[in-house]
Length: 318
Image (cartoon, rainbow, N blue to C red; front, side, top):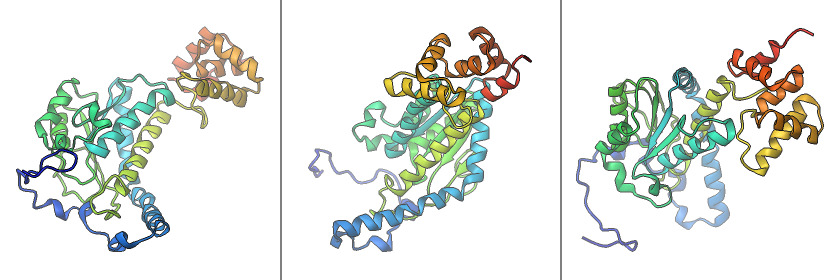
């Protein structure tokens, strides 16, 4: 075996990979064949031009993305979870999106989860071989007791990651809802899922480097899914993140500014109202706009399913 500079040993493929080269993400990009002769400005322009095509590719999948959102919201309302599963860049993006939901929308950490092949150590140091372990994908889901109230979203931009395939197979066996995101065409039924999302971002500037356009598309899709799901669950009022977790100075300041914006009170008064609301911006808005105390504000929010706009419509007649 030949040692690479990073200490890893070269090994030939241990399974038939002959079909991998046909994946759209593995094709060579004619526009970048001569990148090794380009200047910095030429490289930046080329990459930017290629990146500009990503949003259109995602837009072509908007109906399927909406279907995924509806499936996820239905399961979350039942007390279930959304669990992203991926390897490499795909896994990291899933973990990133999941980790941003608690501070942005006040969700419990268990509601949206990210699972990456190779474990959390793979977030900071590549463990690319972990993606080849199909059984590990199923094992990692079984350890999380995945069931019918959950949705498992497999992310594999090149389409054939064994770890992700194993996780989706286990999700199907457990009765969970399933979503698959990839950036290459997939034969109907090839992956057992309720919804398949395929933004076709095309060949990469560096052939096969799906951390680029495919990774950008993945982040756009994941951001859209969780943001839309949280809005449909009542986590915003107008376009404001009223369920945010005010866990740092920036977010505490944002909470105060939200109350100033929605009720017209001064900044210091807003901070005082939020304090009386025990940190709940939702409750503070209802308290201030409806002229009620915390207990009544919480009752109105509960009756309205957590939606501030609907809770305000229920306020007592003056």
